[in-house]
Amino acid sequence: MSDPDRDASADRRDAPDNEYARAYSDGYAEGVRSALRELIANATRGHTVSELKYLAQSRLAQLAEEVERKRRGMLANPRTETWLRRPPTPLAPPRPWTGGDATIRVAPGRTYLVREPRPKKSLEIVGAAADRFASVLWITATPGALPGVPTEKVARLAVSAGTDGPSIESLGGEVRRRLQDVPSTLVYLDGMEAVVLASDAGTALRFVQWILEEAPPESAAVVASVHPGTLEAKELGVLEHSFQVVL
Image (cartoon, rainbow, N blue to C red; front, side, top):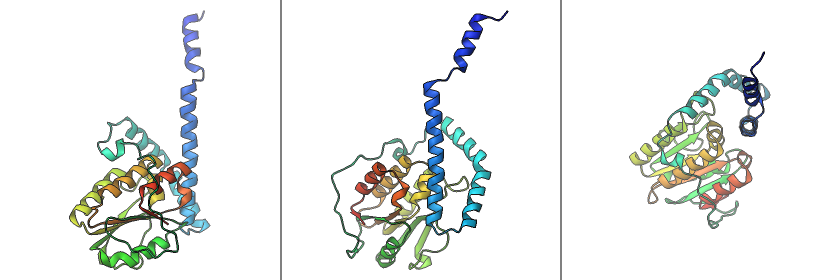
């Protein structure tokens, strides 16, 4: 005969648990959301259908390794970077707002956010301002050279949504080192989509806000380009309020 106590315990273990089901469904939703964001990001970069198919197949091939890495990361000790532990800065009073047709002259101590489907206006702004800074720190997922800026003046930090790129923490350390070495730096971030895909929206917002704080106000400026569809409306609002000028 079976043990009633053991059977009852087994039934309890097998019964659906609300917290488990919620965690599973939240994870499933985040996975679908990340996949769609990656598809949007790649499509807005001008990839052909064949290239999109290849990118999707490559990500599928790396999925098991990426999931295992994420699992180990969640079980590891908490990270020490303070900007990762704190919540994104809440909405502040509205910042100065500049219309899209206004002439932009980038100045040290100022921060600029350009909302655009793909980098265009932001490239024009960076190209026109590069001569006023000793270096341009380009944080990007785009291969190749930075249009309109001499190659020798550009320090490129590659962002990747896959498992083969540097972590967000290591990117933060490299940004700090370069800003300390060359305070007169124009920071240009056009890899926001990849930063979100490599981590999550909250971490991406903290990363951007940390860059804004880390840039020396007397000698550095920050220009960022973002596709408005990369973030939810509330997250996009937090990002916009973190910058002094929004286009």
